[in-house]
Image 1 (tube, rainbow, N blue to C red):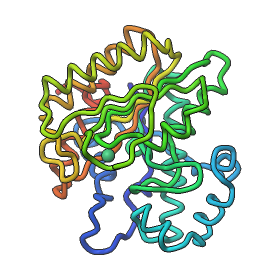
Image 2 (image 1 turned 120 degrees about the vertical axis):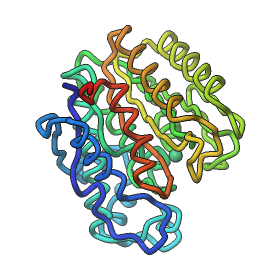
Image 3 (image 1 turned 30 degrees about the vertical axis):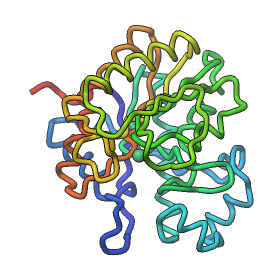
Length: 301
Ligand SMILES: [Zn+2]
């Protein structure tokens, strides 16, 4: 069965009352997968990413200030979470989860992390709930394998993968695609290798045509050896931050399209769940779960 990566710390973070981040969703997805008959044995437990690993990519001063709680209030506001030791521990474990997912994907053809997609993190600052860019780090770790010369980061979260685009801008072995809402955060966009901005209110047909076209174009042009997929569900019609009108069926169709095309081309896929901001956790989990169905990670009933 498809290996899955989860740690209970993903949801273990106290946030201020009415904070808009749905931190409970990760445990909710795990519980829903177990309820659907996914055996516990398919879950792998990640270790936190190390500071040494982070320092390979990030400004060491930024890493040290964030880890020790010395970042100034403005920098923390830009991240959007109050600093705590638990926040750091959770973040480093989540990033470690995507690194483990990348390894498992290379071994098994595909693997999924029940968190991840911190695409607004830059080399020297964090933004939009993202502190360390797991997608970029996972691409670098895949490139350590002799069989991998090129990695495609395929980002379908509704927000542009600005941090990933900037980090990978001068790396010829990592190509970036972002399909996102044109009029949405981040308001100052970066330049990915391929950007597909969508208008507010876009519906399933237009969206799925764009995903199909973007993935085919990127795979043919880049000829990657592996894909990292950010399956954000903030594209959903009921999302609080998305402004697109994609149905739950549309989410399933998108995720199925990605896994099927990659399988046809023999490309391993490491997927992360990305953003999703409905306040109703059960409803949000139901949308995120589509990724696991598309990956064949849920037993047929
Ligand atoms: Zn997002």
